[in-house]
Image (cartoon, rainbow, N blue to C red; front, side, top):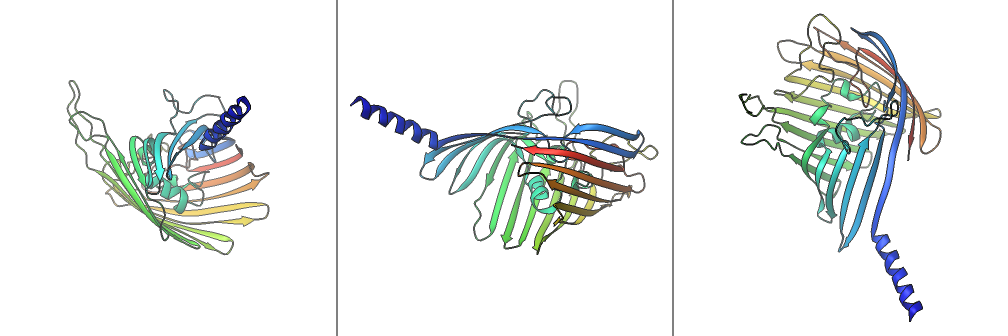
Length: 357
């Protein structure tokens, strides 16, 4: 009986372990970064996360039966150049959510990526918003356009090539809708083609506080249409964005990096991207060209292009080089950044090493 009981306990423990799993994962990325063309002149530095933000994360799931599972993700950003966390006062600043996943789709609550950002990463940008040539040099891909706190999301399972997601972020301001944000995306995938339309809307009002009056601003809205197509060995990418309203397209570097005419964030703009990724020799080549059309009275347009080459040394480790350039007009203030930095000038390059685990 004792042997039978022990065997039953061992089987039960094994079954419980099979039903629950926690995965430790991460990325370690360091690069030499050069920037020029700004008021600071030429800047050379060692930085963390030029290709992919360095991170450590925990991802878990528990089988609840009947096709239902509990899920969670806790992910913190780290700086390989200094050993610090990449956001002061935060632990799991990149992602922190818990949810349920089943036949109905996935519902999650916490700090999460926006549908706008996931569309830019997965469909529009051949760089995946990484390296010096990233779409975020001209497209509004910073701050709350990337991820939001206090967020509830729903993602439907893909059916006949169609999938969709919704996101709502509570502003949590007393008697005010300041900080409230919502968005969504719908996509279609069939064979080599992927098309996705994303929308983002945020309230940038400033709520009243003791001795301070409320500030009303227009609603910031972003619309992004993206497509990619696998043509033989080449993956083609395209994206078109429309931004309207206050804080719809904040400058990645809000200071004045060039001197002269002060750059002003556009409240009525359009962006266009065309690019590709393709195997070339031992690695993968990425390229894109972009245009920013500022339709405000400032007419601060910009053009940009970028190229990157990633060579895998193994399934987990690779070396890369990237170059990006922005041409600003009429005092525009767009800079060449990378996955973790906004950049300080009109030209930038990255030479780095990335390892995933």
